Length: 258
Image (cartoon, rainbow, N blue to C red; front, side, top):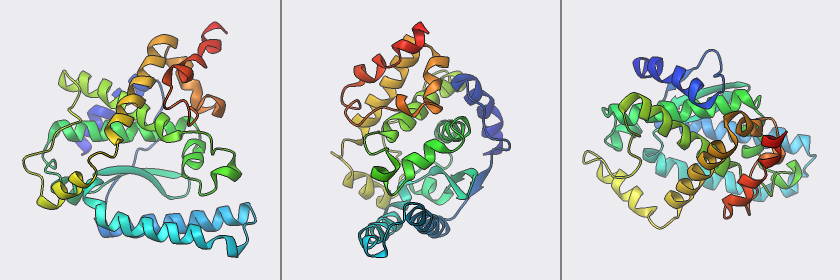
């Protein structure tokens, strides 16, 4: 991971035009430890936001139940989570890698997959640094209607951007984008069953559309103009614009002419 990171991280900065946190922390975790840490992080978020918005305890039952259901689902689907970014300690974002999940997926020894993984997750760290953590906070909030973000699709932005960036980075390293589709012949039966359960969910189509939308904006209006999105919440795509990417692209026109 260190060898791959040493080659990948400078390219992430040059491709995205965004600085990475210093230092970039890559933490290897076991699935059980990750699930426990994630559950603890979400409980802490619930406590902090319920205090911030003065939410009555009687109104928290539904959210608490949803968090418990999410924790249960995460314990079931952890083989699909090879890596992700999180701030297990407030204001200290990390890239978290689950080697056991990569083994389940049959990609633990796949150099191209690891290059893609590091490029993708490092882009999320760059997003955090560029927005001073505000982008993660807006995306992770349990009360979007109170935070004023209910009409914004942060996943369309951050995942589209990260996929666009990892395509660019792996092309520079490998000569072509690391493949995103297909199942490793070394994947476990458990991994295959979990993948089959997601077929027809629309995730692949959503990510393809988000990636193309980010690429179109950068090609049309330039990287510097696109990167203003990290400091300008008004440029984050709306929930309607994920189905009408041209409308999102059009909102960058005034930046180009400024």
